[in-house]
Length: 562
Image (cartoon, rainbow, N blue to C red; front, side, top):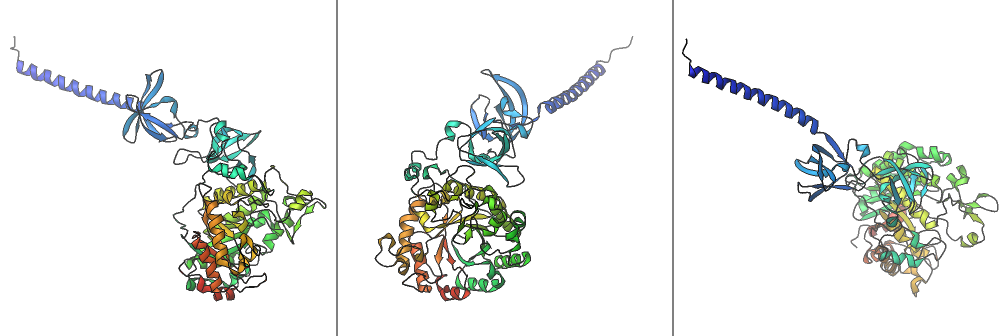
């Protein structure tokens, strides 16, 4: 019988133990790996609100993260106070989250089923175009069918909705989650009461029915607007002589040029015109290439370039679409107002045409900003209205001021997507404390637009307006200081997000008696009056023929310190 070698037995047993430990470790690692692979699923954070809370392991809220974010699931089915939680990893830390806030697909991250209209919204046909399907008024309920994308703050860009059996898309920023909130007005007991008390004095609309919610003003990194814009105006025919305007601008302290796109004269044959108004297209006086080269020259010279579009005064469009115009009820044909025909500002087809033209001009021509002029209804027609002699084609039963403000919202929403700013021209009267008969109300427009450009041309005022003892066009400093300081400045304070004020100045000789030559000194007095009133956003020279001769005569006024 052999003697047992205990040293070998011990070595053998140690070997078995080591092998067993290694095998166990391998099996454990494999098993844990499988478990981890099974439990480390990715999920999407979902909610009816913009953000969702994450909790520590004692169920205290730690942070909020936006819906649409992705988290890693570590453990499911954690019950606390009859609520189910999941343990998740987010940004390298571990938290608990309510399991009801997790979904598998980003398309399921928005949980709201219905929403209410806070600000009357445009209903779009689809996501691919700016075509308008209709209007949904404040306080109305929308069934939510889907959405296009989630913004950086968790809000939805556009919802797909159903309203009165119509399906379409609306911007999420104009919606809220409940009816009670939807029928409120911004700052209900504060500045809103200022506007509500003004009512409707002249038939342009009730100031209390307009929207005063803050409207985000963009700043585009690749398109920086000068803090003070000193601009020349060029009509469409001046395009052929663009080098001379650029030379004058560079020599006189001008840093921007406003160039017509569409006025009585059509600047270039845009594709939008071919689609919406062939008469405009056929009457262009410059070729596509000539116009594009001119705008490029302006930009290459380091000047900020603004494209001007005459909006709701367009005889060419009226020729093509009389059904969209203001009608003479006696004849059933387009109403002729002082020799021109007016597409109705109530018509969404007209909105589409002008904004499509603006977008094309930004994309193809490179404009930094689009300026809409004649954003109003005809003036001096109250007697015709009362007598029922004109028909505005008011499809949605809106006031004039509502239609004007809603157009500005539509234009800004669409043009901002292409990195360009939006400015709106208004009569000097619009800064007074009432809604004008033609639908312009300074606070409603300024609150939405990026830039508002009043047109307080001294010879357009009544001879002794504001109780001056001298004809007001003979004292441009006093007139424009009073207009700016007593009216514009106060209107700007009545809204949460006022536009930049950049004012049109008279750059032509006064046409009223006593006639006054507007030389460099008189133009300087206009600008000084505006700047002393606090309106330092800049100026634009209005000379209907954009006369180089006149501009040169007054050019010493452009670069002065004010």
